[in-house]
Image 1 (cartoon, rainbow, N blue to C red):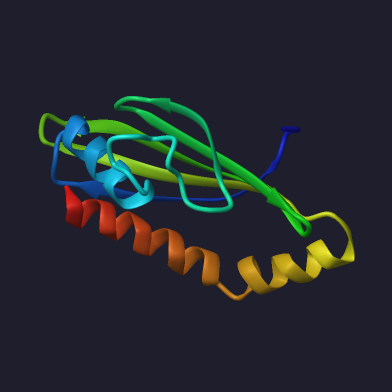
Image 2 (image 1 turned 90 degrees about the horizontal axis):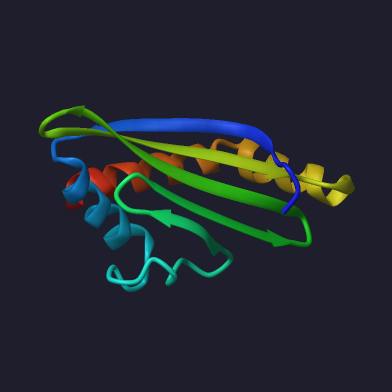
Length: 122
């Protein structure tokens, strides 16, 4: 996939070590938490580097996109989970789609909710 433009990054501290947080990430993101390849519809797995990085990407008529989760130790029992979004929105249809998804704040709400679910699951 060609290089995508940075959209945003959201992060959350999780009261769990990185291994436990990794399992919570897979539980929230994957259909089968035992198999990182079972990502949501619309995404494909680019890489799963346990317990530090899960990279997903996808494309449809209006955009090409990636969502990358990175886990960093903040301490022995605390992990920082970062979700970085990258995307391209080609053409007029893409610009309209970007306005609907990014411009309305809907993307931000969904990503933050996902990070909260990961923290709760850990």
